[in-house]
Image (tube, rainbow, N blue to C red; front, side, top):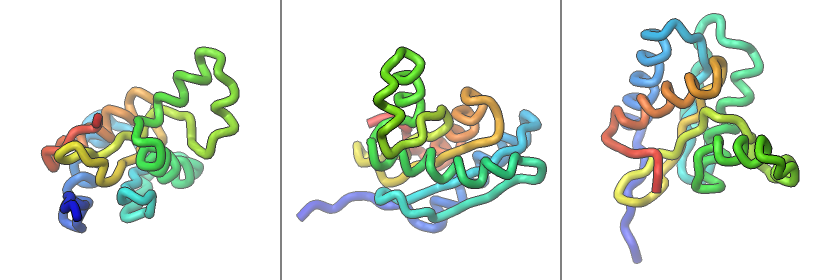
Length: 137
């Protein structure tokens, strides 16, 4: 039997706080969602003035990452390159979802929505870095 790391509530709070701080630094109003390695929502925060739809999109970006073990941008890039069949996949093909990887294991993910794609990613990565994790396997 293998032992593997997992997200604890204290980790989730650190990730969320760092992501929120990054968004505030840039003046971006976003929604931040964090899920565990099964795609179950652990945290959701919609900042003041974040678009209402971002509260639905952010958790799906996070879920996309853990289910596919890839950043959500991978699917956006597929579609932008003409692979429209990716639209039928059960993922949200929008940049802003990043895995939370520790010791080579995807232990969860963060999804950010409400700013531009690259800005959402910057916020997500700041959150991941706050616990010493990385966003790639």
